[in-house]
Image (tube, rainbow, N blue to C red; front, top):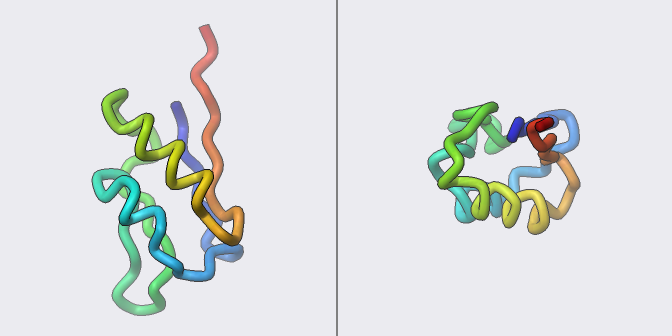
Length: 67
């Protein structure tokens, strides 16, 4: 799994951080998403997918590994 976060689209709602704090954080400066792990561990997959679904601006996306 590869996670993408578009800070130009992010509105700083924080749903990603609440869904999976091991992968997402928010900048102290502007409140926008900070991606902590672009290639997160497998045990975060459920939380990452929840974050993508809950993101109100559509700033998050996931690419599944091939194979």
